[in-house]
Length: 124
Image (tube, rainbow, N blue to C red; front, side, top):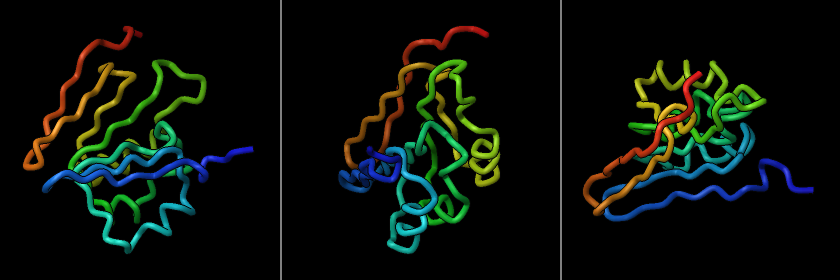
């Protein structure tokens, strides 16, 4: 049976821009990536913002300007976890959450990233 750490983790680069798409990786895989020069402009937060990922050392190594959290509105798991939001805020990393703003599209020409949003999450 597949586990979270079996998911794909990708660092996508085009020109001067890069993103890390972290799948559902947990602390163990994050710690293996720390120190491998994985700096990126943006980070897709692992496992919908679960408390099993997005550790301080990983965030410090990646040093993203913004983070995208893909989580359903009022999901059963309470994602994203408040500790993850606090960790991102402490580092002044911009946070984009699909449960709050809907669809998030990121485009690049290799020199700059453009983030577009569309749709509105249901009101509480």
